[in-house]
Length: 554
Image (cartoon, rainbow, N blue to C red):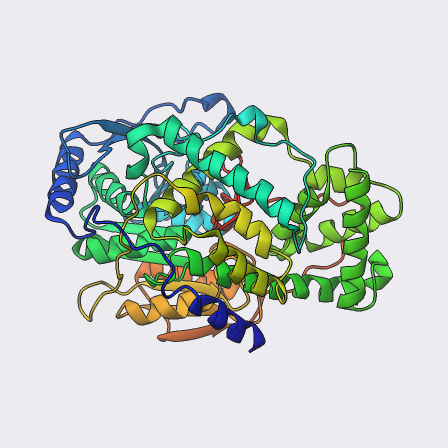
C-alpha cells in the first residue's frame, strides 16, 4: 500500500507539468488511415519473397528471410519507403505427439518481443523447442525487426564505440554535480538523435509500428492477424486492435504495458521503479533463505548490506577494470526480470565478496562486440517512447518526483531517470497517445497473460487492458514475477495459451495459475540460462527476447 500511495503522490505532481502534445499527427487522422490502407493493399499485391537469410550460415536451414516495404510517413504513402526485415519458418504440419498425423495449417503467427528496440527475427527458431512444436505444426512462425531496429532502417544516436564507456557509477541518491553531468549527457544524446536521423526521427513511434504490423499482415496474405506481443509488444498490439479491429483473428498480450494515455510513458516509468523495488526485495528474501549456500545474510536486509558492500568496493576498484557499481546494478536488475537468474547472480556476488571476481565479471561486463546492437536498441527505445507522448520538459519535475520516489524505491529509480531523460530534451514532435479499447463485438476474444509481481510491466497494466478490451480473458500467474510468461516454466499458463492459439478455446474471464517453482540454489559450476539478446541466433523462448539491452519497458 505504501508503494501505491507513493506512486499516486508522485504522479499527481505532473497534472500541470507534462508538456502539451503539439498539433502533430492525429492518431485517427484521415491521411494516415488512407496511407495505411494504400500500403497494405500494395503489400498484399506484392506478397513476400522469402529466401535464404543473410546470416544463413549461423541458422537452421528451415528459417527464411525477406523484406517488406512500408512508408516512412503514412500520411505520404507514395513518399520515402523503408524496408522491414522479416523471418519465417513454415508450419511443419506434423503432430509432435503422433508422428503420422498431419496438422491443419492455421496461417501465420507474428511475434514481437518488446523493447521498444528489440528484434523478433530469431523468434521462428522457437519451433525447435519441445514446448512450441504443437504451435509450430499449425502456424508459420513469423518474426521481424520493427522500424529502426537492426536491418530495418536502423537508427543510431551516438558512436557505438563510446556507448559502453565504463566502469560506471550508480548512486541511489545522486549528488547535484552527478545530476548535472547526467543532464548534459541526456541533452547530448537527444541532440545526437536529431542530428543523425534528421527529419525521419519523428516517424519512429508506436502508431507507425501498429500500421507497419498491418502492412506485414497484408504482405503475408493474412486476411486477419494472429499476433503475440510481449512487454512493449502488448502496447502497440493494443493500438493495432483499436485501429484495425476487423483485421484481428487472435491476439496474445504477454506482460502488459499499462496502455492508459495518462501513463504513456513518464508515469509508467514511475510505476516501474516502484515494482522493481518489490521484486528486488523478493530476490533478496530468496537469497536470505539460502544463506547456508551463499553466505550473504540470513535476512533480506543483511543481503542488501552485502550488495552495498560490493558496490562500494567496486566504486573504489572496479572488478577487472571494467565492472563498477553501474555494471553491478545492471546485472542485478536482470534478476528482477527472470528468477532463473537468481542462483547465478547470488553466486557471483558471494564469490566476489570472498575474493573471486571472475563470476561477477562474466555476468556484468559489457561486451564491446555488442555495443553497436545495444546502441541501436537504445536509440529506437528512446525514439519511440519520446515520440509517443508528452514528457516533462522541466528538470525540476523529474528531480522532485524521483527524489521522492527514491526514498522508498532506490534500487532502480535514478537509473530509470537517466535512461529516459533524453525525452525531456527531445527535438521531434510528440504524438497524442491513443485511448485504446474495444466495445463488445468489435474484437474476437483475446488472451492476456500476466505475472502478479512482474516488475517491468506492473500487474495493474494487465488489469487496465483487460477492462479496455471487451471479450478479453486474463490469465494471472499468482505470487510470481517472471517478465514474459509465454513458453516459460508455468505449464498452466502455457496450456491456456496453446488451447487459445490452436483451438480458439479460452478459460473463464479471470483465471489464476499457481506460481511456477522457485529456483533452486545452483552449484557454482552450473551455467546460467541467460536471456536471449536482441540478435542471439539460437532458439529462445519469446519472453527472453530483447531483454537487457536497455532500461525501460523491454
